[in-house]
Image (cartoon, rainbow over all chains, first blue to last red; front, side):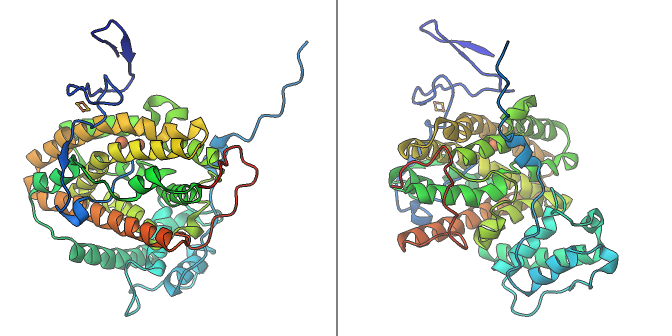
Length: 55
Length: 357
Ligand code: FES
Ligand SMILES: [Fe+2]
Ligand SMILES: [Fe+2]
C-alpha cells in the first residue's frame, strides 16, 4: 500500500490494514502511533496509570 | 576466483527452533512433575491430582509446574516423551493448578460486564507516566534493560502463539480479523519478520542468548504467571471471551509502551537491530488495537453477548498480573538487586554491550 501525502512524498506499508493519522500528532506520520490519545490526569485508578503494556 | 566464503555465523533461526531442557524445580509440585517428565508416562511415578494444602497458586512452585505443563503444547522440553502432552495424570494436575490460578485471579479483580468501561482507562495517555517502560526510558540502566528482556523472553519467543488456539472457536468477522492480526504477528508471510524472530534479534543485539527457553530458570513466577494466563485462556474454549479480552488489552496498551522501550534502547546506546522489535510494534499495534476492539471483540460480543463478563475478566486479569510484575521490577531495582531469581550472566563479548548506566 502506498500513501501519497500532501507534499507529494509517499509512505509505504505492507500491513493488511493501516491506521492513518488524522490528528497530526503522530511521531510516525502518516501512520497512527496512538499519540491521538486523550490525556489522563493523575489520581485516577491505580497511581493514575496501569502498568504499561508490551506487545 | 573468489575467496572462500567465511563460515556462516550460527543462524539465529537455529537457536529459535532448538528445544530447551527441563527447568530446575522450585518446590514439591514442580519437583514431582519434572521427575516424572524424565521418563515415559508408563514408567513414571503417579502425579498428584490435588495441590497440597497451603500451595500458593501464584508462587514459584505452582507457576513453574503450570508453565512446564503448558510447555508440552508448545515446544516441550528435550528428552520428554511426546505422549506426556495428553497424559490423563498430567492433565489432572494441570487442571488442579488452573483451578487454583483461576480462583486467585477472579478473587483479585473487580469483575463486571462493561467492556467499554474497563478498556477506557487503557485508552488514555497518562500525563504523568509511571511504570516499567517509563522507568527504562528515563533512567533505567543497561543491566535493568537486559533483565527486562530476559523476563519477557519467556513470552516473546512464542509471541502470539497462545492466541492461535482461539481461532477454531471464533466465526465470521471475529475470526477473519483475529487471523489478520495473527498474520501480522507471524511476519506477514516472511520468516524473518515473525515477531518472535524480531525479539530474538533484539536479544542477540543486547548480548543475550536468544535460544528458546534459555532464561526460564531465572524468570520468577510473577512473570511466568503472565504467560500462563495466556496459555490457560487459549487452551480452553470456554474462556474464549477472556482470551479475546486479554488480547485486546495487550494491543491497546502496547503501542505507547513500545515507543518508550524503543526510546530506552536508543538512550542506552543499544545496537540498531535492537529497537526494531519495538518500533515495529508502535505502528503495528496502533492498527491491531483498532482491529481487536472493533472487529474481533466487538463482533464476538455481538454474536455471544453472554461473554462480556469473561472479556472483562481477561482485561482485568491482564492488568492485575502486569501490575504485579511492574511492582516487582520497581521494588527490586529500587533496592539495587536483581529482579530475576539469580543475576544474568555477563555478556560474553557480544557486539551489543553498551556501558552500564
Ligand atoms: S490519529 Fe494521529 S496518532 Fe492516531
Ligand atoms: Fe507482536
Ligand atoms: Fe500486536
